[in-house]
Amino acid sequence: MMVMFVGADRSETSVNAAQVTFVSSVTDGTRIRFGEGRSVTVTEPIAEVTDRLNRALLPHE
Image (cartoon, rainbow, N blue to C red; front, side):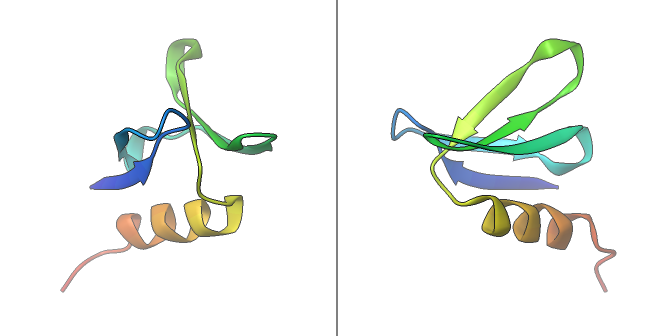
């Protein structure tokens, strides 16, 4: 499931929730890490990021 965020450069950023390996708080917002050393920094606070990623991973009816 894809989740939309606002990137640190103010561009729209789409994240595949199933590929996220680590989420951390940084000065600019929240860093979302994926495999192979890839990451993206978004402006949303870490609590909102984790909530939205978790909801995307829940089974849908």
